[in-house]
Length: 163
Image (cartoon, rainbow, N blue to C red; front, side, top):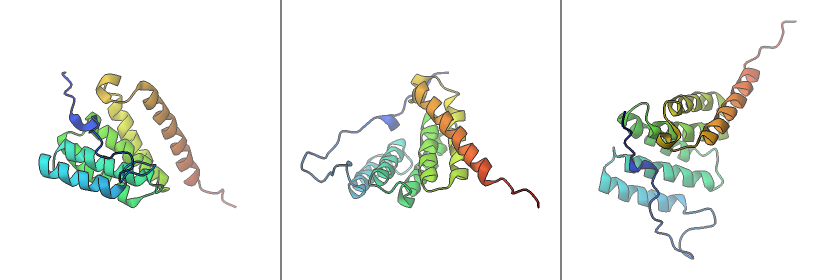
C-alpha cells in the first residue's frame, strides 16, 4: 500500500513579522481566520488545505489561554467533517481526532475525549511512524493519557455502595 502524503501537515510560511499583528502566543485567532478564508477561496471548502487552516484557527484559539474554548472545538469539528470525507482511517483524521480529544478534555468532557483519543490511537496503530506524522513516543504518551482518562471516567461512573 503506497502512502500518499498530503500537504495537511506542512507549515505555511508565516505572514506575520516581528512587531506585526502577532502577539507572544502566536497569531491571534482573527488573523488565522482571515488566512483560513484565503485558503478556502484558493483551495475550496472541502480541501485538506482548508481543513488544515481550520485546525490552525482552532490552535490559535487554544493558545490564547482558552483551553476549553468552544470556538476551537467548532473549528476542529469542521475540519473533521472535511478530513473524514477523504477517508475514515487517514493520518489526517487521526490528527484531528487527537485535537478534538485535547479540547474536550480541557473543557471537562472526559468521556467524549476518551472516545476521540481512542479513535486516533486505533488509526495511528495502522501506520508506521513516517506515515502517521507523529512519533512512536507521542503515540505512547497519548496512550498513557488515554489510560488516565479512562480511570477518571471509571471513578466518575462508580456507584456508591448500597446502605
